[in-house]
Image: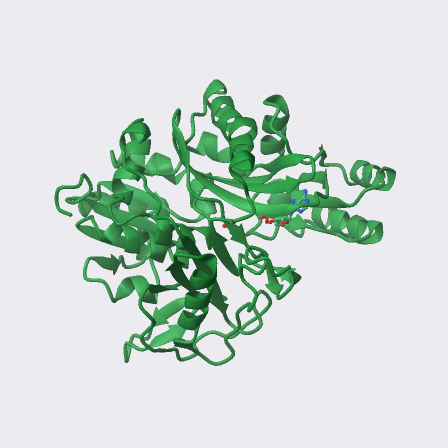
Length: 438
Ligand code: AMP
Ligand code: GLY
Protein backbone atom coordinates (compact mmCIF):
# COMPACT_ATOMS: atom_id res chain seq x y z
CA UNK A 1 0.00 0.00 0.00
CA UNK A 2 3.06 2.24 0.05
CA UNK A 3 2.10 4.10 -3.16
CA UNK A 4 -1.05 5.61 -1.69
CA UNK A 5 -1.06 9.30 -0.71
CA UNK A 6 -1.26 8.80 3.04
CA UNK A 7 1.60 6.30 3.34
CA UNK A 8 4.26 8.63 4.79
CA UNK A 9 1.90 10.44 7.02
CA UNK A 10 1.90 10.68 10.80
CA UNK A 11 -1.63 11.19 12.11
CA UNK A 12 -2.94 12.31 15.48
CA UNK A 13 -6.36 11.14 16.64
CA UNK A 14 -7.74 13.00 19.67
CA UNK A 15 -10.15 11.14 21.95
CA UNK A 16 -10.40 7.96 23.97
CA UNK A 17 -13.46 6.06 22.80
CA UNK A 18 -14.15 3.13 20.50
CA UNK A 19 -14.77 5.69 17.75
CA UNK A 20 -11.15 6.84 18.02
CA UNK A 21 -9.88 3.24 18.19
CA UNK A 22 -11.80 2.43 15.00
CA UNK A 23 -10.44 5.52 13.21
CA UNK A 24 -6.89 4.73 14.34
CA UNK A 25 -7.28 1.11 13.18
CA UNK A 26 -8.45 2.12 9.69
CA UNK A 27 -5.87 4.91 9.35
CA UNK A 28 -3.05 2.62 10.53
CA UNK A 29 -3.58 0.28 7.57
CA UNK A 30 -1.96 2.88 5.33
CA UNK A 31 -0.25 5.70 7.21
CA UNK A 32 3.17 5.51 8.85
CA UNK A 33 2.05 6.07 12.43
CA UNK A 34 -1.07 7.01 14.37
CA UNK A 35 -0.76 8.73 17.74
CA UNK A 36 -3.86 8.76 19.89
CA UNK A 37 -4.39 11.35 22.64
CA UNK A 38 -5.14 10.28 25.32
CA UNK A 39 -6.35 6.97 23.82
CA UNK A 40 -7.33 3.83 25.70
CA UNK A 41 -6.05 0.31 26.43
CA UNK A 42 -6.71 -0.75 22.83
CA UNK A 43 -4.79 2.07 21.17
CA UNK A 44 -1.88 1.69 23.58
CA UNK A 45 -0.95 -1.80 22.54
CA UNK A 46 -1.80 -4.29 19.81
CA UNK A 47 -0.91 -2.58 16.52
CA UNK A 48 2.75 -1.69 15.88
CA UNK A 49 2.10 1.70 14.28
CA UNK A 50 -0.51 2.94 16.76
CA UNK A 51 0.41 4.35 20.17
CA UNK A 52 -0.93 6.70 22.82
CA UNK A 53 0.57 10.07 23.61
CA UNK A 54 1.14 10.71 27.28
CA UNK A 55 -1.26 13.11 28.90
CA UNK A 56 -0.37 16.76 29.38
CA UNK A 57 1.92 17.37 32.32
CA UNK A 58 0.67 20.03 34.72
CA UNK A 59 1.67 23.66 33.93
CA UNK A 60 1.94 23.01 30.19
CA UNK A 61 -0.68 25.48 28.96
CA UNK A 62 -4.15 24.47 27.80
CA UNK A 63 -4.77 20.94 26.63
CA UNK A 64 -5.40 22.12 23.07
CA UNK A 65 -2.19 24.18 22.93
CA UNK A 66 -0.26 21.27 24.36
CA UNK A 67 -1.72 18.81 21.85
CA UNK A 68 -0.99 21.08 18.87
CA UNK A 69 2.57 21.80 20.07
CA UNK A 70 3.26 18.11 20.70
CA UNK A 71 1.81 17.22 17.31
CA UNK A 72 4.13 19.69 15.61
CA UNK A 73 7.15 18.21 17.36
CA UNK A 74 6.11 14.73 16.19
CA UNK A 75 5.70 15.84 12.56
CA UNK A 76 2.01 15.15 12.55
CA UNK A 77 0.57 15.87 9.09
CA UNK A 78 -3.12 15.39 9.90
CA UNK A 79 -5.16 15.84 13.07
CA UNK A 80 -8.48 14.04 13.49
CA UNK A 81 -10.66 15.00 16.45
CA UNK A 82 -13.32 12.76 18.00
CA UNK A 83 -15.04 14.56 20.90
CA UNK A 84 -17.68 17.21 20.28
CA UNK A 85 -16.51 19.62 22.99
CA UNK A 86 -13.02 19.95 21.47
CA UNK A 87 -14.49 20.67 18.02
CA UNK A 88 -17.08 23.13 19.35
CA UNK A 89 -14.39 24.84 21.48
CA UNK A 90 -12.44 25.51 18.28
CA UNK A 91 -9.49 23.10 18.58
CA UNK A 92 -9.13 23.55 14.83
CA UNK A 93 -7.63 27.02 15.36
CA UNK A 94 -4.75 25.62 17.42
CA UNK A 95 -3.77 23.23 14.64
CA UNK A 96 -4.23 25.94 12.00
CA UNK A 97 -1.81 28.19 13.87
CA UNK A 98 0.66 25.29 14.04
CA UNK A 99 0.20 24.75 10.25
CA UNK A 100 -1.07 21.20 10.73
CA UNK A 101 -4.00 20.12 8.51
CA UNK A 102 -6.90 19.58 10.86
CA UNK A 103 -9.91 17.58 9.79
CA UNK A 104 -12.74 18.91 11.97
CA UNK A 105 -14.61 22.09 11.07
CA UNK A 106 -13.92 25.63 12.24
CA UNK A 107 -15.49 26.91 15.43
CA UNK A 108 -17.92 28.98 13.33
CA UNK A 109 -19.20 25.94 11.41
CA UNK A 110 -19.24 23.87 14.62
CA UNK A 111 -21.93 26.13 16.03
CA UNK A 112 -24.34 23.83 14.23
CA UNK A 113 -23.76 21.39 17.10
CA UNK A 114 -22.63 23.90 19.74
CA UNK A 115 -25.92 25.81 19.80
CA UNK A 116 -29.30 24.17 19.23
CA UNK A 117 -30.86 27.65 18.89
CA UNK A 118 -28.38 28.47 16.11
CA UNK A 119 -29.08 25.11 14.40
CA UNK A 120 -32.83 25.59 14.51
CA UNK A 121 -32.68 29.18 13.24
CA UNK A 122 -30.32 28.02 10.49
CA UNK A 123 -32.73 25.26 9.39
CA UNK A 124 -35.65 27.69 9.28
CA UNK A 125 -33.68 30.18 7.25
CA UNK A 126 -32.66 27.57 4.69
CA UNK A 127 -35.94 25.64 4.55
CA UNK A 128 -34.43 22.46 5.95
CA UNK A 129 -37.18 20.18 7.35
CA UNK A 130 -37.04 19.73 11.13
CA UNK A 131 -39.45 19.51 14.07
CA UNK A 132 -41.55 22.64 14.68
CA UNK A 133 -39.94 24.56 17.53
CA UNK A 134 -39.64 27.68 19.66
CA UNK A 135 -36.68 28.98 21.72
CA UNK A 136 -36.93 30.38 25.23
CA UNK A 137 -34.68 31.78 27.92
CA UNK A 138 -37.54 32.97 30.16
CA UNK A 139 -39.00 30.16 32.26
CA UNK A 140 -42.51 31.63 32.55
CA UNK A 141 -42.79 32.14 28.79
CA UNK A 142 -41.58 28.55 28.22
CA UNK A 143 -44.14 27.19 30.69
CA UNK A 144 -46.96 29.19 29.09
CA UNK A 145 -45.97 27.78 25.69
CA UNK A 146 -45.90 24.17 26.87
CA UNK A 147 -49.32 24.63 28.50
CA UNK A 148 -50.70 26.01 25.24
CA UNK A 149 -49.65 23.19 22.90
CA UNK A 150 -51.52 19.93 22.64
CA UNK A 151 -48.80 17.66 21.31
CA UNK A 152 -45.92 15.81 22.95
CA UNK A 153 -42.74 17.90 23.18
CA UNK A 154 -38.97 17.53 23.46
CA UNK A 155 -36.82 19.97 25.47
CA UNK A 156 -33.24 20.65 24.40
CA UNK A 157 -30.67 22.70 26.29
CA UNK A 158 -29.09 25.19 23.88
CA UNK A 159 -25.44 24.27 24.48
CA UNK A 160 -23.44 21.08 24.92
CA UNK A 161 -24.45 19.27 28.11
CA UNK A 162 -22.25 16.17 27.98
CA UNK A 163 -24.81 14.36 25.82
CA UNK A 164 -27.55 14.78 28.42
CA UNK A 165 -29.16 18.00 27.23
CA UNK A 166 -32.17 16.42 25.50
CA UNK A 167 -35.22 15.58 27.61
CA UNK A 168 -38.22 13.61 26.34
CA UNK A 169 -40.97 14.24 28.91
CA UNK A 170 -44.08 12.07 28.67
CA UNK A 171 -46.49 14.42 30.42
CA UNK A 172 -46.98 18.19 30.76
CA UNK A 173 -46.25 18.00 34.50
CA UNK A 174 -42.92 16.31 33.78
CA UNK A 175 -42.16 18.89 31.07
CA UNK A 176 -42.78 21.81 33.42
CA UNK A 177 -40.56 20.30 36.12
CA UNK A 178 -37.79 19.81 33.56
CA UNK A 179 -38.09 23.41 32.33
CA UNK A 180 -37.77 24.73 35.88
CA UNK A 181 -34.78 22.45 36.45
CA UNK A 182 -32.99 23.68 33.32
CA UNK A 183 -33.90 27.38 33.14
CA UNK A 184 -34.30 28.16 36.86
CA UNK A 185 -32.10 25.69 38.77
CA UNK A 186 -29.41 25.54 36.05
CA UNK A 187 -29.17 21.77 36.06
CA UNK A 188 -27.14 21.91 32.83
CA UNK A 189 -25.26 25.05 33.89
CA UNK A 190 -24.72 27.69 31.21
CA UNK A 191 -25.59 25.15 28.46
CA UNK A 192 -29.20 25.47 29.67
CA UNK A 193 -29.50 29.26 29.84
CA UNK A 194 -31.87 28.91 26.92
CA UNK A 195 -33.82 25.95 25.57
CA UNK A 196 -35.43 24.81 22.36
CA UNK A 197 -38.86 23.26 22.78
CA UNK A 198 -39.90 21.19 19.79
CA UNK A 199 -42.60 18.82 18.65
CA UNK A 200 -42.01 15.15 19.29
CA UNK A 201 -41.52 13.39 15.95
CA UNK A 202 -42.75 9.86 15.33
CA UNK A 203 -40.76 7.73 12.90
CA UNK A 204 -37.58 5.77 12.33
CA UNK A 205 -34.34 7.40 13.39
CA UNK A 206 -31.20 7.06 11.28
CA UNK A 207 -27.72 8.57 11.33
CA UNK A 208 -25.95 9.86 8.26
CA UNK A 209 -22.22 10.63 8.25
CA UNK A 210 -21.18 12.96 5.43
CA UNK A 211 -17.70 14.11 4.46
CA UNK A 212 -17.46 17.65 3.11
CA UNK A 213 -14.67 19.83 1.74
CA UNK A 214 -16.92 22.88 1.87
CA UNK A 215 -18.41 22.31 -1.57
CA UNK A 216 -18.41 18.63 -2.47
CA UNK A 217 -20.03 16.18 -0.06
CA UNK A 218 -20.06 12.38 0.09
CA UNK A 219 -22.10 10.36 2.56
CA UNK A 220 -21.34 6.97 4.08
CA UNK A 221 -24.12 4.37 4.21
CA UNK A 222 -26.92 5.17 6.68
CA UNK A 223 -26.76 3.66 10.14
CA UNK A 224 -29.17 3.05 12.98
CA UNK A 225 -28.07 3.58 16.58
CA UNK A 226 -29.80 2.20 19.67
CA UNK A 227 -29.83 5.02 22.20
CA UNK A 228 -31.67 3.45 25.11
CA UNK A 229 -30.00 1.09 27.54
CA UNK A 230 -32.73 -1.54 27.48
CA UNK A 231 -33.97 -4.02 24.91
CA UNK A 232 -37.02 -2.84 22.97
CA UNK A 233 -35.72 0.75 23.29
CA UNK A 234 -36.58 1.10 26.97
CA UNK A 235 -34.86 2.80 29.89
CA UNK A 236 -32.63 5.87 29.95
CA UNK A 237 -30.72 7.30 26.99
CA UNK A 238 -27.06 6.38 26.60
CA UNK A 239 -24.24 7.45 24.31
CA UNK A 240 -25.38 4.63 21.97
CA UNK A 241 -25.47 0.86 22.47
CA UNK A 242 -24.84 -0.40 18.93
CA UNK A 243 -25.20 0.48 15.25
CA UNK A 244 -25.86 -1.47 12.09
CA UNK A 245 -25.29 -0.14 8.62
CA UNK A 246 -26.59 0.24 5.96
CA UNK A 247 -30.19 0.41 7.16
CA UNK A 248 -32.11 -1.87 4.76
CA UNK A 249 -35.45 -0.07 5.00
CA UNK A 250 -34.01 3.29 3.92
CA UNK A 251 -34.62 3.29 0.19
CA UNK A 252 -32.50 4.94 -2.50
CA UNK A 253 -35.29 7.42 -3.09
CA UNK A 254 -35.40 8.35 0.62
CA UNK A 255 -31.64 8.91 0.52
CA UNK A 256 -32.00 11.08 -2.58
CA UNK A 257 -34.69 13.10 -0.83
CA UNK A 258 -32.40 13.49 2.23
CA UNK A 259 -29.57 14.73 -0.02
CA UNK A 260 -31.84 17.15 -1.85
CA UNK A 261 -33.83 18.52 1.08
CA UNK A 262 -31.33 18.29 3.95
CA UNK A 263 -27.67 17.65 3.16
CA UNK A 264 -27.23 19.87 0.10
CA UNK A 265 -29.04 22.91 1.60
CA UNK A 266 -27.10 22.47 4.85
CA UNK A 267 -23.68 22.78 3.20
CA UNK A 268 -24.92 25.48 0.79
CA UNK A 269 -26.43 27.44 3.70
CA UNK A 270 -23.23 27.28 5.73
CA UNK A 271 -21.24 28.43 2.71
CA UNK A 272 -23.65 31.30 2.12
CA UNK A 273 -23.26 32.34 5.76
CA UNK A 274 -19.47 32.44 5.45
CA UNK A 275 -19.00 29.30 7.56
CA UNK A 276 -18.02 26.67 4.98
CA UNK A 277 -18.12 23.22 6.53
CA UNK A 278 -14.92 21.20 6.20
CA UNK A 279 -15.04 17.92 8.07
CA UNK A 280 -17.62 15.31 8.86
CA UNK A 281 -21.24 16.22 9.45
CA UNK A 282 -23.34 13.73 11.38
CA UNK A 283 -27.02 14.33 10.72
CA UNK A 284 -29.57 12.61 12.96
CA UNK A 285 -32.67 12.17 10.81
CA UNK A 286 -36.21 11.03 11.61
CA UNK A 287 -37.93 9.34 8.69
CA UNK A 288 -41.45 10.56 9.46
CA UNK A 289 -44.69 9.77 7.58
CA UNK A 290 -44.35 13.18 5.88
CA UNK A 291 -40.70 12.78 4.90
CA UNK A 292 -37.25 12.99 6.48
CA UNK A 293 -36.63 15.68 9.12
CA UNK A 294 -33.48 16.69 10.98
CA UNK A 295 -33.35 15.69 14.66
CA UNK A 296 -29.96 17.25 15.25
CA UNK A 297 -26.59 17.99 13.72
CA UNK A 298 -23.26 16.85 15.13
CA UNK A 299 -20.03 18.20 13.69
CA UNK A 300 -17.94 15.09 14.27
CA UNK A 301 -17.86 11.34 13.75
CA UNK A 302 -20.63 9.45 15.58
CA UNK A 303 -19.96 6.91 18.27
CA UNK A 304 -20.86 4.03 17.74
CA UNK A 305 -21.72 4.87 14.06
CA UNK A 306 -18.04 5.18 13.14
CA UNK A 307 -17.16 1.68 14.33
CA UNK A 308 -19.57 0.20 11.78
CA UNK A 309 -18.58 2.66 9.03
CA UNK A 310 -14.89 1.75 9.34
CA UNK A 311 -15.78 -1.92 8.80
CA UNK A 312 -17.54 -0.97 5.55
CA UNK A 313 -14.77 1.06 3.92
CA UNK A 314 -13.00 -0.90 1.18
CA UNK A 315 -9.41 -2.08 1.77
CA UNK A 316 -8.09 0.32 -0.85
CA UNK A 317 -9.85 3.38 0.56
CA UNK A 318 -7.12 5.54 2.07
CA UNK A 319 -8.99 7.22 4.91
CA UNK A 320 -6.17 9.69 5.56
CA UNK A 321 -6.30 10.78 1.91
CA UNK A 322 -10.07 11.25 2.20
CA UNK A 323 -9.71 13.40 5.33
CA UNK A 324 -6.87 15.43 3.84
CA UNK A 325 -8.84 15.98 0.63
CA UNK A 326 -11.57 17.65 2.72
CA UNK A 327 -9.02 20.15 4.01
CA UNK A 328 -7.78 20.96 0.48
CA UNK A 329 -11.12 21.14 -1.35
CA UNK A 330 -10.42 18.00 -3.38
CA UNK A 331 -12.93 15.51 -2.00
CA UNK A 332 -14.18 14.90 -5.56
CA UNK A 333 -10.77 13.46 -6.48
CA UNK A 334 -10.24 10.70 -3.90
CA UNK A 335 -11.34 7.10 -3.75
CA UNK A 336 -14.01 6.54 -1.11
CA UNK A 337 -15.44 3.07 -1.63
CA UNK A 338 -17.74 1.03 0.51
CA UNK A 339 -17.83 -2.76 0.39
CA UNK A 340 -21.16 -4.30 -0.54
CA UNK A 341 -22.49 -5.90 2.63
CA UNK A 342 -23.34 -4.89 6.17
CA UNK A 343 -21.62 -3.97 9.42
CA UNK A 344 -22.87 -4.18 12.96
CA UNK A 345 -21.34 -3.24 16.29
CA UNK A 346 -22.52 -4.07 19.78
CA UNK A 347 -21.46 -1.93 22.73
CA UNK A 348 -20.41 -3.72 25.91
CA UNK A 349 -20.85 -1.52 28.99
CA UNK A 350 -20.22 -1.57 32.73
CA UNK A 351 -23.13 -2.76 34.87
CA UNK A 352 -25.07 0.31 36.07
CA UNK A 353 -24.33 2.42 32.96
CA UNK A 354 -25.67 5.03 32.10
CA UNK A 355 -26.09 5.53 35.87
CA UNK A 356 -23.26 5.03 38.37
CA UNK A 357 -20.89 2.11 37.75
CA UNK A 358 -17.64 0.74 39.14
CA UNK A 359 -14.37 0.84 37.20
CA UNK A 360 -11.10 -1.06 37.63
CA UNK A 361 -12.57 -4.49 36.86
CA UNK A 362 -10.23 -7.04 35.38
CA UNK A 363 -10.87 -7.80 31.70
CA UNK A 364 -10.26 -11.14 30.01
CA UNK A 365 -10.06 -11.03 26.22
CA UNK A 366 -10.10 -14.26 24.25
CA UNK A 367 -9.25 -14.37 20.53
CA UNK A 368 -12.23 -13.16 18.53
CA UNK A 369 -13.53 -14.79 15.34
CA UNK A 370 -12.12 -13.73 11.96
CA UNK A 371 -13.69 -10.55 10.61
CA UNK A 372 -14.52 -9.23 14.08
CA UNK A 373 -12.88 -6.14 15.59
CA UNK A 374 -12.98 -5.55 19.33
CA UNK A 375 -12.68 -1.77 19.58
CA UNK A 376 -11.83 -0.50 23.05
CA UNK A 377 -13.50 2.45 24.78
CA UNK A 378 -13.27 2.64 28.59
CA UNK A 379 -10.25 0.36 29.05
CA UNK A 380 -6.87 1.01 30.62
CA UNK A 381 -3.67 -1.00 31.01
CA UNK A 382 -2.63 -1.44 34.60
CA UNK A 383 0.71 0.27 35.16
CA UNK A 384 2.04 -2.49 37.40
CA UNK A 385 1.14 -5.64 35.47
CA UNK A 386 0.01 -4.35 32.02
CA UNK A 387 -3.31 -6.14 32.47
CA UNK A 388 -6.50 -4.63 31.08
CA UNK A 389 -9.00 -2.99 33.43
CA UNK A 390 -12.32 -1.26 32.85
CA UNK A 391 -12.11 2.52 32.98
CA UNK A 392 -15.49 3.83 31.83
CA UNK A 393 -19.18 3.24 31.14
CA UNK A 394 -18.93 2.06 27.56
CA UNK A 395 -16.04 -0.40 27.63
CA UNK A 396 -15.94 -2.08 24.19
CA UNK A 397 -17.62 -1.87 20.84
CA UNK A 398 -17.48 -5.22 19.08
CA UNK A 399 -17.82 -4.75 15.33
CA UNK A 400 -18.19 -7.18 12.44
CA UNK A 401 -18.70 -7.20 8.69
CA UNK A 402 -20.98 -9.66 6.88
CA UNK A 403 -22.27 -10.13 3.38
CA UNK A 404 -25.76 -10.10 4.87
CA UNK A 405 -27.05 -8.15 7.85
CA UNK A 406 -27.83 -11.43 9.62
CA UNK A 407 -24.20 -12.54 9.22
CA UNK A 408 -22.83 -9.20 10.48
CA UNK A 409 -25.08 -9.27 13.54
CA UNK A 410 -24.33 -12.92 14.37
CA UNK A 411 -20.58 -12.31 14.04
CA UNK A 412 -20.69 -9.22 16.25
CA UNK A 413 -22.50 -11.20 18.96
CA UNK A 414 -19.98 -14.07 18.60
CA UNK A 415 -17.29 -11.44 19.12
CA UNK A 416 -18.99 -10.25 22.30
CA UNK A 417 -18.44 -13.78 23.68
CA UNK A 418 -14.68 -13.19 23.53
CA UNK A 419 -14.94 -10.30 26.03
CA UNK A 420 -15.37 -10.81 29.73
CA UNK A 421 -15.46 -8.64 32.86
CA UNK A 422 -17.55 -8.69 35.97
CA UNK A 423 -21.00 -7.14 35.53
CA UNK A 424 -20.74 -6.51 31.77
CA UNK A 425 -23.96 -5.61 29.99
CA UNK A 426 -24.99 -5.29 26.34
CA UNK A 427 -28.21 -5.11 24.40
CA UNK A 428 -29.28 -8.39 22.80
CA UNK A 429 -31.48 -6.80 20.14
CA UNK A 430 -29.12 -4.64 18.09
CA UNK A 431 -30.42 -4.50 14.49
CA UNK A 432 -33.79 -6.09 15.38
CA UNK A 433 -35.60 -3.53 13.25
CA UNK A 434 -33.21 -3.95 10.32
CA UNK A 435 -33.68 -7.71 10.49
CA UNK A 436 -37.45 -7.19 10.35
CA UNK A 437 -38.01 -8.54 13.87
CA UNK A 438 -40.02 -5.53 15.13
P1 AMP B 1 -29.49 13.82 21.18
O1 AMP B 1 -28.91 13.70 22.57
O2 AMP B 1 -29.57 15.21 20.66
O3 AMP B 1 -28.90 12.80 20.25
O4 AMP B 1 -31.03 13.40 21.33
C1 AMP B 1 -31.31 12.24 21.99
C2 AMP B 1 -32.40 11.50 21.30
O5 AMP B 1 -33.66 12.12 21.58
C3 AMP B 1 -32.35 11.45 19.79
O6 AMP B 1 -31.45 10.52 19.33
C4 AMP B 1 -33.78 11.07 19.47
O7 AMP B 1 -33.98 9.69 19.66
C5 AMP B 1 -34.55 11.82 20.52
N1 AMP B 1 -35.12 13.06 19.98
C6 AMP B 1 -34.54 14.26 19.91
N2 AMP B 1 -35.39 15.16 19.34
C7 AMP B 1 -36.52 14.51 19.07
C8 AMP B 1 -37.79 14.87 18.50
N3 AMP B 1 -38.06 16.13 18.12
N4 AMP B 1 -38.73 13.91 18.38
C9 AMP B 1 -38.51 12.65 18.79
N5 AMP B 1 -37.33 12.25 19.32
C10 AMP B 1 -36.35 13.15 19.48
N1 GLY C 1 -24.34 7.99 18.30
C1 GLY C 1 -24.68 9.26 18.72
C2 GLY C 1 -23.58 10.25 18.78
O1 GLY C 1 -22.45 10.01 18.41
O2 GLY C 1 -23.87 11.35 19.19
